[in-house]
Image (cartoon, rainbow over all chains, first blue to last red; front, side):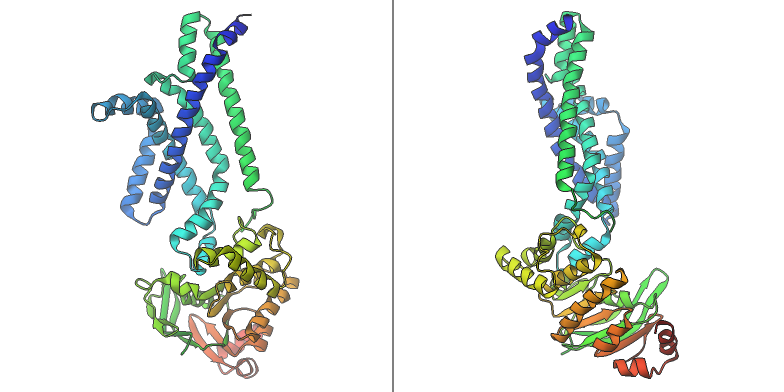
Length: 221
Length: 242
């Protein structure tokens, strides 16, 4: 069984590369949430210039293929600012996902009944406190399914960073397949790693959603 | 000194001229009930009092201080005014106790223990001593509204504003909320109440204010308004609702 041979030979190597994939994904998604939240606020702002800036960013990140953004950030920016492949990859992934996260969060924030903000303000909370204590927690909870979805896409998008030479899972698989002439078996094994990661991740997201929801939320306001 | 003193208040939403020159004062300990047909501007007036809406024209003084919404720290002004909404607006991600303690802790900087003690005391007052751990979604409408009243009272306000607080309730739940409001009024709380509950207005009001088309048509004691209304608009309105 050639597939068993592939597993035997690459199990630990792939597992180590999976660690790199997870680092890339984690760093880029944390950054994406920070960027996304910032641009969600810019888009919700009453300042016209802020709206245009946010629209431009969201349009750019959603309008260009990720691989182009990756190459641009790594090779294009390197003439001004030298970035390691890992950071160029993480930043590009974050920059790309940030546009989607911004739209997810903007929608979630807008969907919270404005009466919630009014109730908070009527108790003397500042605009910022009302946002932080009352609106955002509810918006995040409602955004979990969409954010989880975006995170799964982010995990899979991290494969493209292989083209910058980051030793993550997909780049390891390409190297292995080129060496052992068994692309079918090798990519099948690598694909299974991703599948398992996504399954674990989905389970975690569901768990989180349940934890933050159960009977606690009102269906209608 | 009046708690609230309004002079020449105007408010428009686009082309809709909702408030057309309102003059109104509320004295300490007074219960003012505002009645009138839908669309007469009652709720907008109430929302202007704590600046959820900014007046276009006119002056509002709170405890004698003239308020300029653009310059005054409104958060400070609102700390002294409790408001209860038609749709309850409890915070669904906080349990009953936290709904009540969040503002005292976060706004006033009270210690948890202090805030919890205040909250438990108020829950007792509104008749829900055993529901502090419940989630808003587990409460009936009447219970939600009583928690909302407790939440507003926890800030120890000088005045309470009630915006049609029984309108979203099933008929059999209206009384438990009105009862809490009655106890509050009897305890000397200054209150402005927008309501369609004429029984409450007649029984509890020190003064009834009749509004129509963005203006105060007539005001007086419940006896004056309900038993011998002077204005045609008041007579017509009361004829419909009583």
